[in-house]
Length: 531
Image (tube, rainbow, N blue to C red; front, top):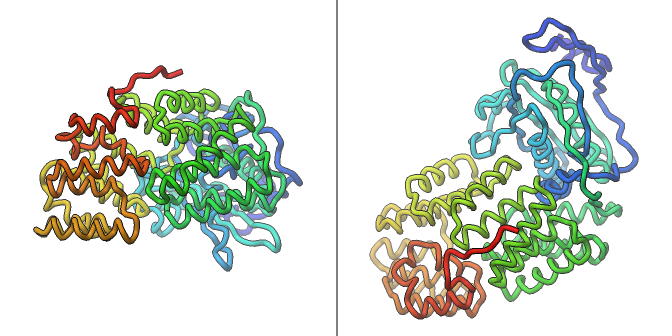
């Protein structure tokens, strides 16, 4: 029967299924091409608000309240992996839609009773798998969700399928045609179809105020593109995202989620060293405050404000805002991730790791939690755990290869095994790493001169110079000079003075303690109430 429905019976609206392990046939209606509603559903669940940023707001309404009844409950949870969607457009311009839809499906399936979604870190090299069944087997999953996005006149054609790992056959497939405004309806239908095919059910309560996306299709398209660019964490693309977000809020000045996304993009870019505090920080803080003023019930707005308050060294206030975001939407993965980072900065590592594990559970497709977990291992001197995660991360997450290589190198430097750090620095040839390569080759003064030149020509961070002085030159006074400059430059990396083993020998120096008072970390760990 499965073979029949894959060939000449593909267009059948009625299908007969014999579930594995059962002798009772099931008859179900299954159209191969679904007509889409004219408008996106206007109600969205609390869970959807978590997916709105994690899935680039592509799937608001995706996990809206629905209950899929079954004749009997599944014997066990079915494991699935959600593979990258293919961009089949002629000019490769729809990747952001496929990526966002994939992340939204992942987020909704995580909430679906009877389905377990494999985390990305657990399935290396899936993007190069020959077919969905091979990818599912590599992920140790029972099935794989695949998809593609292509142009269809002035609209979209989206195909979502579910393949069985054991047989290689498709358990379910659906083709959707519509416009960008129909994406939430597409996601909703796809989750229902996947759940039916797996014998699972979902019942997500809708007990939160509705969250609205812009009705203007031009604004929505700009917002989706900006959000996809922001998610790359690449300097050039985040600057491009900033320009698009500014256009979004100019066209839709009451769009709170747009302000929150714009604020987070600026502040994360500053945190990642993609732009300076001067060029992005104050604007990010202003946008975060406007987002909260526009919608005090929006979790993403409070999360962005938490980032803003962190950037101003206001740890207790930042922690309260991040907790508020989680209270407003307990399914908001980015909220838990940002709370974990905040807890790590103030020295509450065990709590940070618990929050981080929640973020990983809520959004298995997201890479960033693995990176922060590696940082936690490094800060708590769990060297073997950090090196193991760095090795797995380099294999499983090609886009994070540089980060995980840098993590391994830092571990070796902290352990005094600088020669082992050399290959990792050589693979990432920015100014800071090139200086380290020279130092490891026996010329630390040459590396230092290169860093000073990079400071003049490309704005190399003062904090990087402090790190190099402390670890490669063993220059206590020089390191403190550049830490003070980092404070004047308002560099977010300065919080690592409290965390990085490189600074163990100077952390209690009177000059270092003065810097700590300036960033409100004189007493550490910092205590503050969760609520």
